[in-house]
Image 1 (cartoon, rainbow, N blue to C red):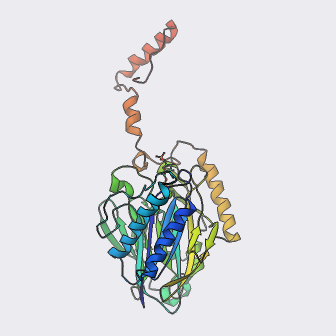
Image 2 (cartoon, rainbow, N blue to C red):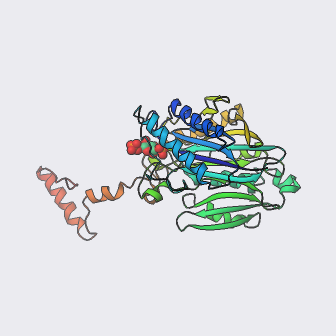
Image 3 (cartoon, rainbow, N blue to C red):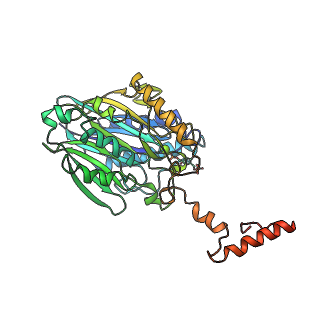
Length: 399
Ligand SMILES: O=P(O)(O)OC[C@H]1O[C@](O)(COP(=O)(O)O)[C@@H](O)[C@@H]1O
Ligand SMILES: [Mg+2]
């Protein structure tokens, strides 16, 4: 059976600030999807959050970029905004809904989208991810580890069905070009691109032996859509597991070392990506209440829910980072967060100006007086003379 899995995610209001979501938002979204399931639009669904972002995980048979599925997600986010976020005056109600009208495809309107259509195998394990206070390129490194690094994925060496390697589809979000790179042979070129996480983003991964889709990541860049900072492009991703694909444990292993990602406070800081636990999973209501963002609006966190698909139904969810093995990883991430926080506004904790989501620098530069290199000495002497005379020193800023 051909099944499509869609994860569509949006921040439509935070509670409080940008830390978490209101449980009523998740309940409202789940009720809306339940009704769509009853009408036969979708086979199954699960609603979860990581930080202030709500992910709608849906299964159906309509293929990728389907107007009905995208429309359902858009309507759901709109209603959650109107009926819950605005009612309780939650922070940034409707934040990610950047355009007014939906015209058939939710891409380019603000929400993040990861979709994959495939033949459901006799047994189909799937891991659904979401991350907050970071960007889609945060998944570049773990995707490389899962599908191309034998030190992470033993199957690349041991399992003959993985020996032919994988095909990486990489999107250049600035020039809108797509690169198709094969591993293992193109590994160095691939790394050359995807190490630039703000520009080259792994959108999909396929198994080379039969072209089977293996992973899908979201690639929307909000600031490029809106032309200004409107929150970080907190991403969603899904990965199929086992039988010639990375094992569940090889997928999770890629998060065992908290790598530094861009995002965190005001989308302008580097920090460790912490694999986080969900607080509560309700398989009946089809809801998972995920991690919240606390220290310095973070640190950036990723959550992972595991499912087994059967005829498109989602058996689950299992909280994949809820394990003592990941307690240690969380400790390491907390230590890295503590270490790097002490740098305050200094790079590399604070991102370089061209990568900061806030562009305060031009305003700062406009405010502070500067002098041509051959004239500053005269001004410096004037300051000294004024200081000696005891006359008030002219303020160095315009106002
Ligand atoms: O003061 P504002 O306008 O809410 O903007 C600041 C907020 O933007 C953020 O970068 C938004 O994060 P999200 O992208 O998760 O919504 C927060 O870290 C920060 O609190
Ligand atoms: Mg967010």
